[in-house]
Amino acid sequence: MNLQNNISNHDKNSIKVLVKRGSSVESIHRAHASICDTKGRTLMKAGFPEYETFIRSALKPFQALPFLTSGTLEKYNLDNKTLALACGSHCGSSVHARTAFKLLWNSDIDIKELKCPIPQNRESRLQHNCSGKHSAFLATCKKMNWDLDSYLMGHHPLQIEIFRRVSELLKIPAEELIAERDDCGAPTLLLRLSQMAILYAHLSRSDQPEFEKITRAMINHPDLLAGEGYFDSELIKRSHKQIISKGGSEGIQCIGLMGEGIGLSIKVEDGSKRAKHAVAIHLLRQLEWITPSAIEELDEIILQKNPGIYIEVEGKLQVP
Image (cartoon, rainbow, N blue to C red; front, side):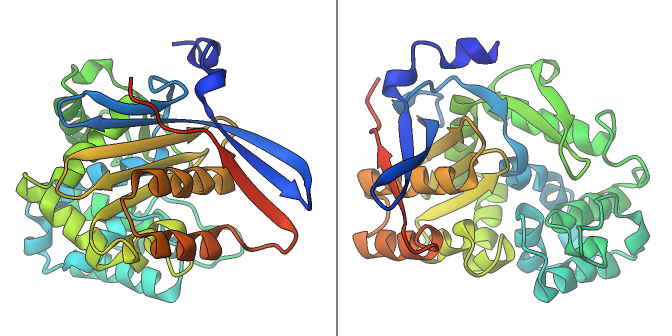
């Protein structure tokens, strides 16, 4: 699907984020959103819910499925903290690095096997925000006797299993999935916003044991997903265990309403991180998925960082 076809004729219904310096508009971001249930029905939308883009790191809870279902955690005596880290895009703190190291140590895997890059101005691959995912990939391969060196290749059994599970949830043939290399080297998928929302609807419904375990790990260890002061962690902490949240680069944000089987996906066209957070807070306020006081706290922590800079969001979700 051509990007231009994605956005044409849907501009008037999209969400706009206005960044103001004083009373003057300095920047404008445009976003699209989709809310779906596990049956694939679009419940609400803003802009173009079939917008096609890469899910990026919002795929991580689903990339962690083989780590869980293969029995790797039990085999190597790993806990839910390592599972949460596998689902996260952490800030590279000492706690995050130690948890990734524990995952590798228990699995008897050398750090040199990690293929995520060493972040700029850092000393170790363990500090990369995807080190949890990569460590879980390696541990799963060790448990399953799969090749460790090629674990990021699309034809590797690990990646094939991830694609299979995603295609099963979306009810499409696995061969229809389009995968490309993410910045960390792992495959990510080209999906429609509605498909991302469907994935998070399944994840939040928790009627399958593996999803229940993944969401419990995310909810009970939110700081391992990102870190203190970061959107996903702060939203989950304020949601009273009602929300799961996972963002991705280039303006991707996915959220699930626990126990309801409802997923929300957001894409900011220009990839702005501040805009996706502003849109998420704006829509959560409209949906009333968390309390007004939690919304205000989240707004203050995430958006109100620079004096004299104000962010306003225009647009609402609509029923199709």
